[in-house]
Image (cartoon, rainbow, N blue to C red; front, side):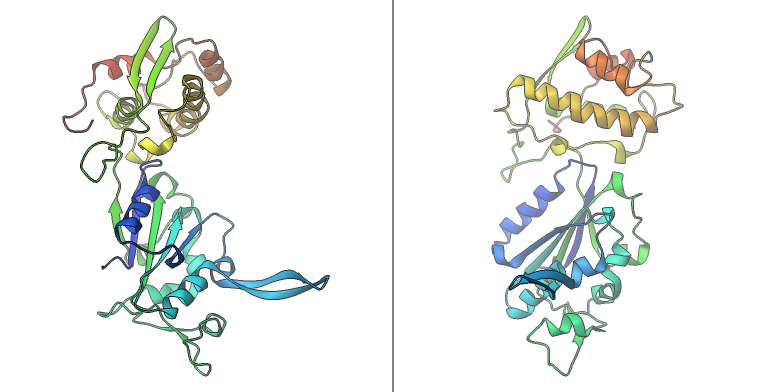
Amino acid sequence: MSTLQLIYYGAPGTGKSYVVDKKLKELKIEENQIFRVTFHPEYTYSDFTGQLLPVVKDDEITYDYQRGIFTNALRQAYNDLSKPVFLIIEEMSRGNVAAIFGDIFQLLDRNDKNVSRYPIRNSVIAKEIPQIDDNNDVVKLPANFNILGTVNTSDQNVFVMDTAFKRRFDWRYISTDPVRNKDGTLFEEDNVLLKLKYGSREVETNWHEFYMKLNSFITDRRHGLGLSEDKQIGQFFIQFSKKMPQEIIEDKIKNKLIQYLWDDVESASYGTTVKLFNEEITNYSDLYRAMEKEKQFFSDTFLTYFEALELPDGVL
């Protein structure tokens, strides 16, 4: 096993977390060897490694040191060096990774034995690792300590990862193509039927076909919007299930997908001649009202594109 430091990246909803969980199951990693955290703009180095927090003892407020997720994972790794430990970091680019990792950044360089090439001196973390000598505050990542991360390409402008940080991880792209099961068949549990009404026009399709053709229109530079791939979506952008009533499916399309398309895609295509939505719609209120009254809100250009486009063989 040579995972160590790996980041899965792709458009929102492509199933990056699904791939992580699938990998952990394939490796048969025990639950107590997995530590999971989600980064966000307010997440700090102290949250990650540990900090003094108020606790109530005997009706009095006192302060105790509480280990962070990184220190807990490292402690578990040292506890049994024969078992792999995985630190899972979701939405890495939503947090300021340089500030969150701090001096831990130096530990990410591994030698040929997969141990940190450059240890750090951190007495606070070292104190929480029983296997580290009390007179020695040198901390390093052992060979059984692995980090798996996920990054939404559409979020990379929240906190930009510098090259120095990026090159210490392997990167694996997760495409927008529908996910396949282990036997090669398509994962179909979410491929719900869609009946979309646009005034006098009605399109009957399924979720996989719809989002794939939508993605094609978003990036097509000749006949579509010509935007970058980070504006596309994956099949898990909405958590559909074939057990869902049709009204719930329609509600999710209306209040989740269309809102994203207006806020992130329509705004990015400002100034282009090709439009995703009807040109008569100038704000989200107009768009929502058109949806409620089942009027045409997608542009004729998109609907014509959708009906004419043939997806490549093997995609669906």
